[in-house]
Structure formats: C-alpha cells, structure tokens
Image 1 (cartoon, rainbow, N blue to C red):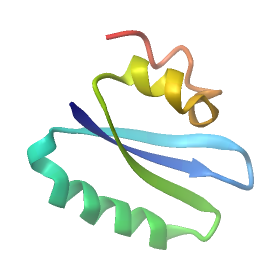
Image 2 (cartoon, helix red, strand yellow):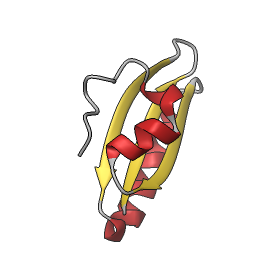
Image 3 (tube, rainbow, N blue to C red):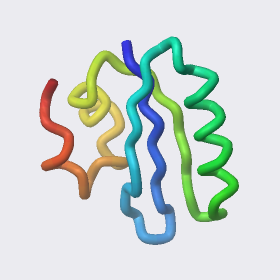
Length: 74
C-alpha cells in the first residue's frame, strides 16, 4: 500500500497536487500535510492509503476530476 497526500482547492473545485509516499514515510507525509493545511483556508488536504493511484481515482473520484489524464492505471 502507498500513501497519497492530496491537496484540493475547495473554492475552485480543482485538485492542486498529489504526492505519493511509501508507508515508511508516514511522518514526512504528516509534516507536509500540516504545512499544506496552513497554506490556505480553502485547501482541503487528505492523506489516504491505497494500493495504487488508479484505485484511489476510483474510490475518491471527486479529487481527480481535472487529473484524469495524469492518473493512469499503475
């Protein structure tokens, strides 16, 4: 399983960034998540665990509406 840190702009309803971390990088992912949350009040920042980006796109599709071409099945 991988960790995926997603930053989503609520006001624009667009994804801003997706970062992938190995499970051993949980502390680093949390550090980055906190920094992203403090960057702007309209940002939604979530840390999710999934086997692949393609799986994440299926289970959390609203975050990826503008990234469909970027998130190809692994």
